Image (cartoon, rainbow, N blue to C red):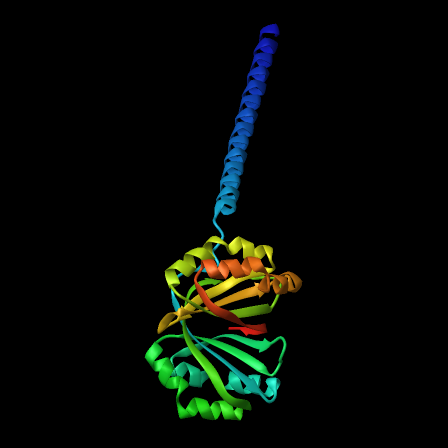
Length: 251
C-alpha cells in the first residue's frame, strides 16, 4: 500500500514538473515575439524619422513668360483669364502665378511656364491672345518679358506680398556670385528670395522676386547705403525698378 502511494506521489510530481516546464517555454516564446515586434516597430519609426524632406529649391533653368498690364475690373478679368486656359495650353504655355498690384490694384502680373520659347513668342503676338485680353478688359498694351529663371523656392511662406525687382548688370556671372553670397542679408531686412533669373535673350537684364516678410525693414533697406554698395559691387547699372504685388493664385 505504501509502495502504491509512493508511486502515485512520484507520478504527480513528474506531471507538475512537466506542466511548469511547458508553461515556462510558452512565456519565453511570447517574450521573444514581443521583442521582435518592438524591434520592427522601432526600426520602422527610425526609418520614417530619417527620411529627408523634399527640397523646395529648383535650380534647373525654367523658361517663363511674364506679362504686366492694367485691367478695368480685376474680378471680371480673372474669370476671363481662367476661362482661356485651353488657349494658353495650345500656345505652349501653362499658368503659374497671378498677382495683383499692392499700390495700384488695377495692375496685374501674370507668369506662365513655357514649353517652347519660339511657340510662346508666337502666342504672345497672336490675334487670339489679343482678342482674349480685350474680352478680359485689359487696358493698353501689356509689357511682356521672356525670362529664364535659374532659381526658384516653391516652399510656403507666411505672406502673399511680393516684390519684383528688375535691374541691369554689367556681367551676369559676377553679379550672381555677389548676390548669392549675401542672401542672408536680404532675409535680415525683410526679404525672402523666391526666384531670380534673366531675360532669355539678354542675361544683363535681371529679375528678382522676393517675399516681403517685413514691409518696414524692406522699404528702409531699399533706400539704404548698404544696398547701394551691394549694387555697385555686383556691377548693377542704373536704378532698380520695383513692382509690389500680392499673389492671388499659384497654379
